[in-house]
Image (cartoon, rainbow, N blue to C red):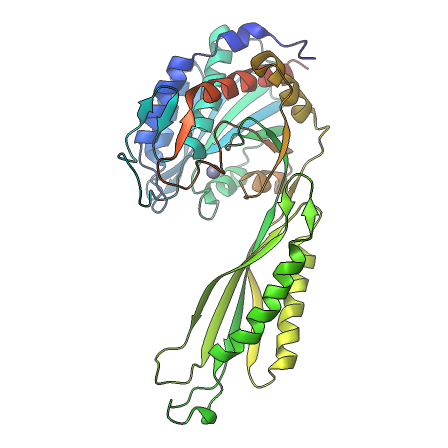
Length: 392
Ligand SMILES: [Zn+2]
């Protein structure tokens, strides 16, 4: 196990340059909205150009951009390392300036450190090591960094629309160095309730849409209980959360409308179509209970679950590349959050997720931090896996 890897490539990975790059990436403020990813794309461009990659910036307008960098001469096979440039807004509770990278021992603290500027630095550091050592690649390494993953995923879609593709991809989102071949999908679904307005002094003249939310919520709660039992060995259980309710205009008016919006997570094996039909059935059930109100359900967003075969060549190679770096195969895991991986799979690119840092313990919260050692380990594993993939 772990045989057949060129260990000189792991040795060429430079933890100092990766730490310095990560620091610059964290200090480029790309909180989304508005994103402003171009500043971080430029940081990566200068690093990767100096390392010997061919870089282009895909302009998306309004200070937003993707970076595309290539190494290698042959067309095929090709492998893409991908990450997103944007971060969530900083929020409150920080003990330091979120836009300054504070290094204490092995920890680098700053907004986006784990999600996922460490993953970008690891991918770029791996590419730089491969370029530096002059490894002969039979194919192409494509490093891409995209805008807007934390919102609509427009960067990843623009990348695919521009014809950037590969035979496989690794999204370097934080997975604590586990290999994710499965991930939950997501449907956002809105139920619009329509009643009849009336003056509050004579509510019996109208039909109160807000009161229609009560039986709807009871049915949705029963559905949420059922979904907790729908389980996947790698990604946990399916779920349903009512996250938003809006309704009415004024205490003195019988509410003519009310909207209930929910987030449904799907485990691998569930289909978007079936899950939407199940939600439609809940809406149908509440219609029968409240015939005097109108209920209309519709999906606002639909991202399929991620489900890649464990025996995918890049998955096997990455797992084994764990050996020379960490002393064991990479553990398999499942993602509970959605990523750009689903966009690449939908475009026909087999994609797995692997990277430094922790979603559960660091991402989207104050004092976000990442281990510099783990970031360098990720870079080494990526460098070994890429060169192995491109020698076969
Ligand atoms: Zn992320």
